[in-house]
Amino acid sequence: MIENYAILPCNGLDKCAGVISGELAKRLFENGKNEMICPVFYRISETKYNRIAGEHALLVIDGCQTRCASKLAAEKNLKVSRKILVTEEAKNHNVELKSNLRLLDNEKALIEIMLNDLNKTEDKVIQTSDETNTSFHFEYETFQHGKFIFRVPRNPEVYFNENDCWVYVIGNRARIGVTDFVQQNLSDILYFTPPEIGEEIDQFGEAGDIESSKSVFELISPVSGKVVTINEELVEKPEMINENPYEKGWMAEIELTDFESDKELLIRFEKYFEIMKRKVEDLNG
Amino acid sequence: MSETTFMGVERDKIDWKPTIDYAKCDYCMECVKFCPHQVFEVRESDAIKLIVRNPHNCVVFCRACSKTCGPDALSFPDKNATTQKIKEIRKEMESHD
Image 1: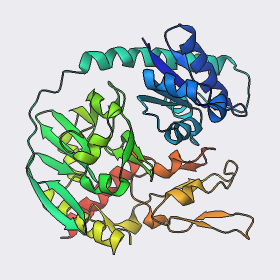
Image 2: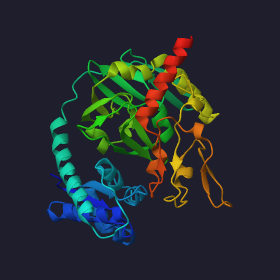
Image 3: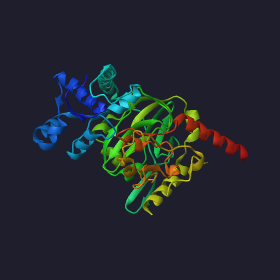
């Protein structure tokens, strides 16, 4: 159950998704165990809400992809613990959002689904926090360009896709993340949105995203399978991806469904190292 | 410069690019600001002010620009169909080697 969060909705009044964001926030507030941040009042008076945000984990609810609530959180230097994007949730649950600003049955049902998912995920995350004991050891080759150093693991267990994501495979289980090329390009990573535990992901499907003040990057999964664990620590400390995107900065663990087939479109260290060097040189001249 | 091949397949043989739904697009140009690969082009003086100018610069399987799109006006081809197509082309290439 969602408890002890500060809820920051976008509360956009002129879009259906914004109205849903506000309504979902109200429902979470109603249980008496969460605090609410009004995005409008926060703009003119920040003392109260800075205190609330400082004392609680922060849940940001964006209505649409403009992500006003996330932008407000970034502007106020708030640390985001969890994020929801209503339009994405609607897509995932096959709910079509129209232009109505009053909540009809469709929107009400979506709110119930989101509440249910939020509570379920909260329980699951707690259960899985200690499930990452398998050993992952990395040996690196490095490449320097100016002041930037790029590491690439050369272990035989590690594969890459050309979207700059890696996978470390042990048996039918794999750990995934982004490479140094991504974290160096994004610079300071401020947010990590993990995939859902239990979610089935196709090869090249989205497995969460990371965001810096410069850009957003989707983790394009190198493998297909079911998400069994996420790196919870990254949600609180996304800067760990900058420190080391392979070890502390891993993002999720996947139970593989068809690695033999996935392998056809993956590359090994030697090839990725060459591709990455070329990308670095192309970007920086 | 963008990569000219993806998984050994010529980039221009892979159909992966954003499609703009002009009924939804409000020309906020967030996608243009976001994409570092110059996929989009702004045409201020035209009725249609935004086009996909360089589809083959688009990074295969990247859909990140659609996340910046408030009105949800950007869509991409089916990922599984694209993956399948890449595999087929690679098989064809191998059989010619």
